[in-house]
Length: 268
Ligand SMILES: O=C(O)CCC(=O)C(=O)O
Image (cartoon, rainbow, N blue to C red; front, top):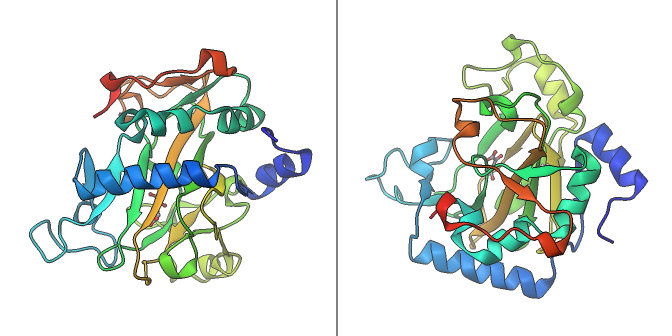
């Protein structure tokens, strides 16, 4: 199946996410994982370090112990055609058209990375909406998160608050960095509804840019790898002058014959 069924679309609209099991084949995941591991071992940039984000559990500075722990291998789309072909594949594009409309583009400015969660120095991420720092005409984007290995509670899988993409939050419920304030009773009640997006290699989580999510630290022995891209309708433009408009969008062709070949010019 290269498309969502009616129930899956209804679930996405209601909960703000949908998980498709086994969307990427095992051999493809193995290839993508090997490539990601090679890029991580060789420290191929651009990189984001845990010390850059300063989230709980991250090293305090680049020169602190573990300070060069990588959080993200950035610009995944242009790093290697293998990443680019996955990002523009019909398995994703056909489903995104069902969610976003007939013409879909990838935003190279957001996610567009391999998330790496290190067992020793990987940080946890508080409850947030990705859209908080993104600037588009409409807050309607979908991120596509491919697990390259098993993701579960112990290694810091994503945690989701179903339905929050449709909710309004008064500014007092968020801190200065727009994370949910977990000390507030109202927020604590909401946090009881959380669900863990536990995935096996090849499973894909589609989630809305307004959906609150978080993740814990990696308490296992192995690094967790996830390949993540973000998409929007072609007529939902990034706002001029913002980070969201800093790189040219990538059109997602609606037939394999028109497949877009990754351009080196927009990345590494
Ligand atoms: O894996 C994590 O710690 C969370 C990543 C995340 O939510 C994000 O980068 O927006």
